[in-house]
Length: 231
Image (cartoon, rainbow, N blue to C red; front, side):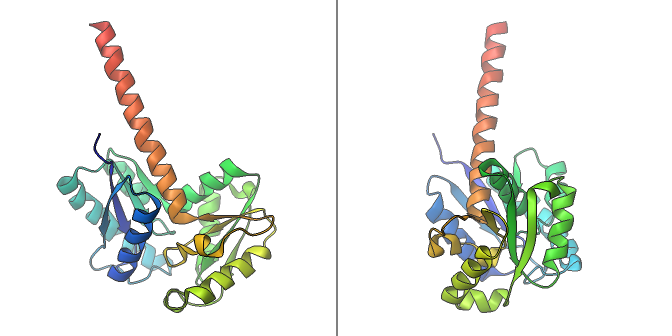
């Protein structure tokens, strides 16, 4: 059986971030054929509601073009703001996963309440809106902002890991989502924290897309067997 093909679409128009995400994804899931994609003409880093709107258009265009070329089994929008997620799902038959939704689903499957760590001044309010829109506000203990910029933390992974670990210990939740493309990979670097389970948003996205691809295959097999029985 061939490897499942998954589009890995960086919501930020930054090739270096795309390459980093692809390396982390391939290390985490070598049995998946990831196709890394960087939208053209979007913001280098999605940090405001206006950025999300612009990025959404570019992400949907990128997924549409790549779908024709690669015939993928699924897609991950590798941006915690999930630009273009709803639009992509309305246009495309294969599963499309957003980092925030996948992380929240994973957190709820693992425990009672979760907190979210993120970057940027606008992101806490934006993510609180997203939590409410998904109807899981009662399961979210809060959204906290980590000091620093994406560029600065990417350049200093030791500082980034220390900042995330320190912030996680201050949350009123035993499950803490580390949310944002710039923060992916830090959970493995931090290691276990006493009484806290950290969720890497990229790992959660890979786990959810793998489950959906497997489900589609099982559902397809069941449908085929049903048709054969009718014959």
